[in-house]
Image (tube, rainbow, N blue to C red; front, side):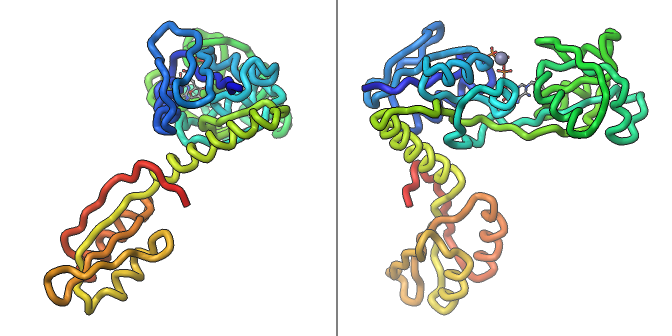
Length: 284
Ligand code: PRT
Ligand code: ZN
């Protein structure tokens, strides 16, 4: 029994998809130009496809699961389930207007021609907001459409915003935020589901680990309570006496997003020799 996963063949999601599977301890040969490959230590076959085709392949069960952008999942409207949000490939689908053109809220879109590759999502957005606009479907280089007179506005993916900027456009509406998703066919057998569960378990451990750091520090015993209250840890911190009288070593786990704030408070509370190390996997 082998599960089939579809990932992007090349492009923005390729590196992170391969990295995630490898961090899950799955070994495979991903030399370029391969269409598929089998993992050597996990019941998984990896298919390399164009991202646009992944929802269809998963719906048809050519692949059982797949990694693809939420934007593509929403646009294609295929019968697939979202199994896990993966936290990479983050971007947003936005409407952009030429810089020099007046924009006074969403009604300014009425009567315009909007170029996009996301006709389905854009249609839904315009309908919801009761805007009558003309959609021009184009498959690539959407950002040049206003400059060549093909459209008045565009609807495209944005991450840093530099593509819009260099094309004299500015973001005026955000339709949706997107990140890579693990999707699956809704009808998996019991054995297939068991492999999926195993994979998701590993993915969650990798995701949690990347959000946390392991922290070790030396604390004067008189401030120990204060220091412990600053770093609650997974359950509670480990405390070991140091050879030096009156001092302890404290070990715990710290969330990445509160990291700097907590470190400063720890220093003020008398902590010394603070070591912060990355965590590879985290299983709670
Ligand atoms: O060949 P294939 O069809 O598989 O790939 P593709 O060319 O269709 O897709 P690809 O590799 O460009 O993107 C794959 C997925 O990455 C997308 O579906 C999104 O989910 C995600 N993603 C994240 C992005 C971006 N960020 C992104 N910035 N996809 C595209 N872009 C493009 C955008 O279209 C625009 O042209 O980057 C440009 C804007 O970037 P900034 O940084 O200048 O704002
Ligand atoms: Zn594509």
